[in-house]
Image (cartoon, rainbow, N blue to C red; front, top):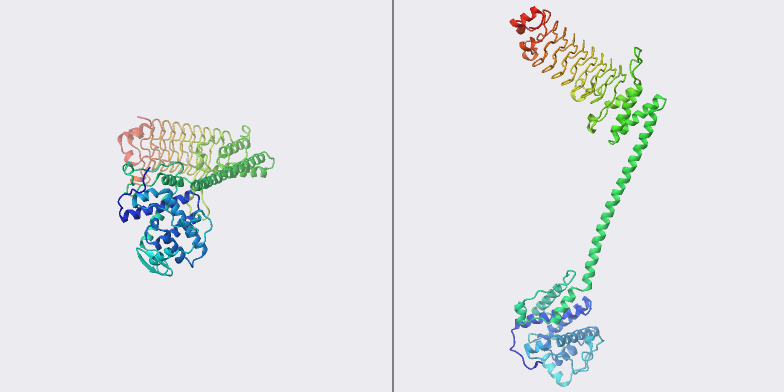
Length: 584
């Protein structure tokens, strides 16, 4: 037990102001923990501030006579609802002080806190603080009226710092600062707290002395418990839950939209593949029709599918290759054959001409082995890695093709050559074929027949032409560097300004060949027949000279009919070889 009559020495005014702010903040938290809405709490706080501004001192110093003067004179002309609300707020505040801070206030001030209207029959004494309706208090007694007359002059007035002022009450600087502090503490107390329990931070050293870290009196445990309960109130939990649900709903909607778009794309892809499959089946059926125009339609339909579907590209090439092999067969032995392929066969070959090399067409093998393509027009056809073993391409047109008619002739940007790089033309018949500027890099032309073929400016580096028949062929300006021409027949062939650098010409027949300006540097001419060949320079300038050394020339068979440039003909070793007409 503690005697309330014992109290300590008074504290400073600054500590009283801070303590008053803490009491007001605790009152706000207590009202909030009781379940009152914010508007009700704000109204109670406003009522208390107005009473405090009129009274001019700490509210717990208010006596019953002060309350009689305030409600009997200052608020006499106010509305009944205003008097009732203010009386109720003041009564609840004093009940809060009696329950929470009665002992603490006595220890600081020596005053026993009690509600000012105690002992009266007015509304405050009858429980106005409990929310019941309140009327105006009874007129003060003579003694109280006399005291009130000394305290406040007649008429509406308020007291501030001991000075009586007439007029309507106006909040001063002290009350304004007090209100701001209380509002700030209220906002901090109402800040959203995370879900779950959060223990308040405690200062052990300050707690031992019964004060906070700032030196103010430490709040009671019940007030701390109330603040913690308020931070963890169901309203903030509900607000966070709603926010999380809204976020989850947004993410779910985004995921659903993405899945829907993917599903639509998949369905469109499936429909597109189904349409291509239907078109492919219809085109293949048209290839077996008896009418040529229907077959042509099927070929062009397959060409369109090849352009639209990269997946079906190899399949279309295989189907059209089989179609050409089936409809361009060799005629009976020693029997006459057509002078040129049928229109549908040429259309199928045209598909090879227009295929896109960027889709890996250079790695596809076009199987045209044993086909009869005499007189076929294959200008600009891409037959890379094509298998033309035993194919008859006699009189075929495999020359380069140009662009539109308005294009300047010779414009390299609009010239397209027939591509036979890496093609297998073993024993192929290419007599009289037009293969101007054709690309035959690494092509296999062993035992192929190329008599009188036109291969001007053709590209044949590293091509295999062993035992090939190139008699009378036009190879002027052709590139045959490092080509294999062992025992090939190049009699009376035109090799003007051709490039035979490092070519293998062992046992090759070059009799009567025109080799003027030909580059035979590092060529192997062992046993080559150069009788009657013309190796003279075209012009005396170095660029147009026939490039061949004496050592290379002496490896071949020469005679007096071999025409050599003067710089070589005057060499004594060459002269002896020409006289003997054979190899030295």
